[in-house]
Amino acid sequence: MSASIDAIRKVKLSSIVLPLKTAISDAKVFTGRQKPMTEVVFLFAEITTESGHEGIGFSYSKRAGGPAQYAHACEVADNLIGEDPNDIPRLYDKLLWAGASVGRSGVATQALAAIDIALYDLKAKRASLPLAKLLGPYRNSVRTYNTSGGFLNATIEEVKDRATQSIEEGIGGIKIKVGLPDNKEDIRRVAAVREHIGDDVPLMVDANQQWDRATALRMGRALDEFNLVWIEEPLDAYDAIGHADLRQALDTPIATGEMLASVREHQDLIDTRSCDIIQPDCPRVGGITQFQKLLTRADAAGLDLAPHFAMEIHLHMAALFPREPWVEHFDWLDPLFNEKLETRDGRMIVPDRPGLGITLTDQARAWTRESATFGD
Ligand SMILES: [Mg+2]
Image 1 (cartoon, helix red, strand yellow):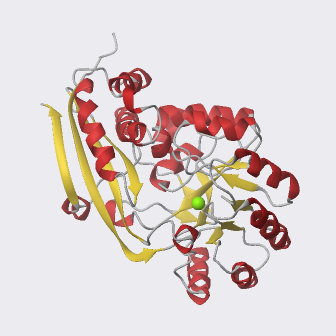
Image 2: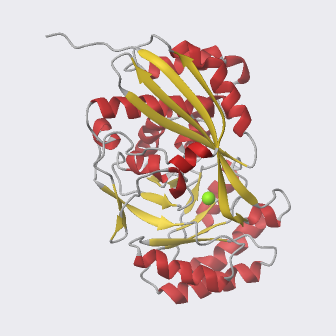
Image 3: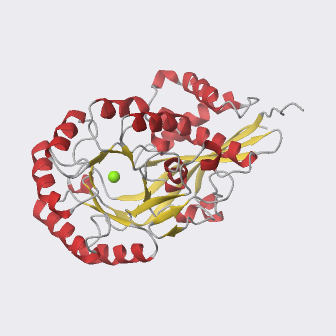
């Protein structure tokens, strides 16, 4: 019996605006570079084949870029109709070349990420396998830490309460934001949280790129005593040499990479030995085809892995990495999906549902700002 070959029949693209419960501030707000964040804009791709198989994927943007991602995806989506949904890297290249004049990173490839992820979701669903199982995981659960409780708009009492709640919910680590205008206040907050959670709970800090090199060195030295798992984005995301120098000077490991928008940009971090933990973001680097290339390169370079945001995708991706990674727990996306990811004993459990294991809620559908269908 020969294998049956399927064809893509329909592509539906939707721009969905998720409102946040409270306005969110990290260090970029305190340096005046950004306004508090009130919503996240998602690009969802839903793909259907002639045989009736379906896949869903998403990309996202914060503060700006949502309409651009959606517009770019709409311009190239037609190229998928009639194509074999199995040929994902080839289809990625086809879409890339269809829009190549605007480049191979950033908004253009983030638009393709939603489609690429949907094709992998479809492939895993057709195989009746969770996405991680389709690709070949090293583990069925991943260490997880909470981020959404530790932003700078929260008082230290709120941060401590949320840390307690996270640990009770089976989330193993706690990350808090730093980068306040008053460096001493950062240290006070870190000290208060370390005292509150005790020495045994993994603790990380994230400066969201807002220190200069001298400040990062001074703060890094002051933070070394708190036995942090990592210091995240101490410097501008593109300052690879600055990160490499800082890494040499400190005991605490350095993590970065979330803002980089392609595999190529991450390669600079790898080549310059700029970090101990690499933090790629699957939608931001163009999807799963690209992310897998990065996993191979990060592994070969001996780096550890802690993907950024979008735990619904990154749980599956992190499970593929040979060394024990971390996945970042955010509760923000909960209203979008009917399913909830399970956390237990400090770990997030890879769901046993086929594909990514997500379906959109009625509420998410109601938050649709624009949608378009191609094919059919
Ligand atoms: Mg971060």
